[in-house]
Each structure stands twice: as C-alpha cells, then as structure tokens.
Image 1 (cartoon, rainbow, N blue to C red):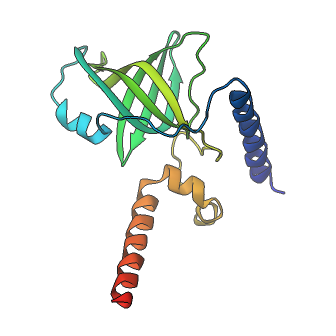
Image 2 (image 1 turned 90 degrees about the vertical axis):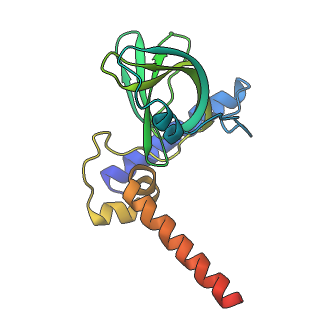
Length: 184
C-alpha cells in the first residue's frame, strides 16, 4: 500500500472513530434536515455592496462544504462553498466547541457582516454538522493534481474541483437525456 493510500485509510479510520464518539454522546452526525433560508450565491448577490466592517441585523441560515479553516487566536475563519460560490464564516472559538473539519457539510445560522477587509461574512451564532466527510481532504492550497491522482481518488476530486463537478454533472445530464429519448 502506498504512503498516500495508507494516510487516507488511517484518516478515514480516525474519522469513523470520531463519528462513533458523537453517536455515543447522543449527537447525530447525519441529521435528517436543516432549514436553510438562502443560498451562498443569493447572499453574495444580495449583499454585493456591503461596506467593510459593516454589520447588519439580517439573520440567515445556509449550507455548504467547509473548504478552508483558519484559527486566528479567538476567531475561526471558515470558508464555506456551495455550487461554486464561497462565503466566509466568522466563529468565536470557544474551547468547548469543536470546529468542523475540511470536507464536512455544515449548516450555519448567523448575522450578515463584512470583515475589516470587506469580505462578505456570516458571524456564526450556531452551526450544525450535516454530513461528516469520510474522504480525506486534499491540499488546502488547491495545487494541481496529476490525471492519475484525480482518477484514482475520484471522490476527492469531485469534492474539491469545481471543473470536475461541472463535467460530471453535464455528462450525467447528457446520459439522462439520451435515456429519455431512447425510452420515448
């Protein structure tokens, strides 16, 4: 077994153990529903002109995949992605709250704000793990992968690479269209 394959296997085993610990603590790592009020792309369109350091009273709920997590001494900055659109989350890092992991699908509820640099953000009041990732996330800097690596670890490629997801979706729609035409 190669070094990368061994690392991926051990990461998955550790993640499964964490999920079992969550179940024993009475937390469902795969809840049945989360009521989102908007999508990330709708938020970006609605608050495109929000000035730097602005705070609103607009409370929203949205979902997405954690693609980046940074701890800045007391505040976590999480980049959430859904449908190709990204949104920054600002979370107080309280010692009793475990941050989500890269690759996890989460639902967040909070207030719309803009960071000091002007980045549209949600100041998280609560978040819920919707689906824990069992696939080891790739390089957070998004370095290009070889064709062989992307083919061998297709699930990770689809999770991280927007272009691969678009091709996969278009291919699926084309095959579905052909099936409908042949059944008619």
